[in-house]
Image 1 (tube, rainbow, N blue to C red):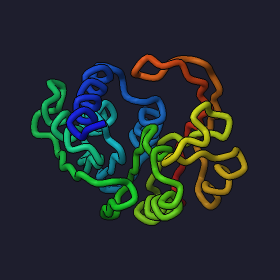
Image 2 (cartoon, helix red, strand yellow; image 1 turned 135 degrees about the horizontal axis):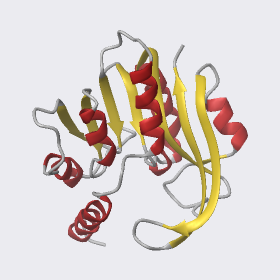
Image 3 (tube, rainbow, N blue to C red; image 1 turned 180 degrees about the horizontal axis):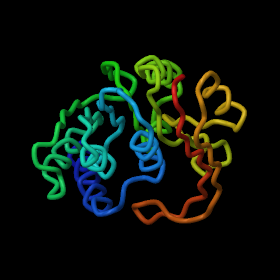
Image 4 (cartoon, rainbow, N blue to C red; image 1 turned 60 degrees about the vertical axis):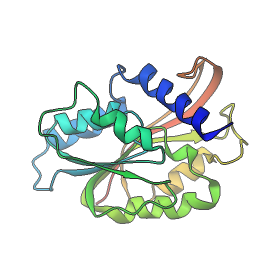
Length: 203
């Protein structure tokens, strides 16, 4: 597939998902920040930001956001959204997850993006996420389980329940929901999902 075709596919994907609400893990984490008194600087990183369904919600809550995505059209899609808050503190970075470097922050969100990290990069990306969080900071996102129908695909990372728990060791786990369901992808393909929905706080 040509690069041009790939870009058109992503543009269509962003258009299809643009009107969807922010992920529940994101909302759960932001609510925890809002409901607890904290003096943390409200700066967040949205890894694999896509068309911005989560990024916009973080901005709406008054945070500054660095949106990171490997697809250049993703950042443009976010900036062109009609629901982007006026004066939003948004910055963007075009980078693969394995290459991205970002500053310390109070919140790292990565909705359904980490499974797209190649296995050889995953451990370093995960350590970068943990290391970038300031004390009291949170991670929210998803990992794919070993019973997902995509398990074994080249360039993707999957985890058992035990491996997920090992990744979260030393963090305060505030949400860990394991979901298995049969439905479709945003592009309409049938799929068996095995997903871990996670919110965890750095002590």
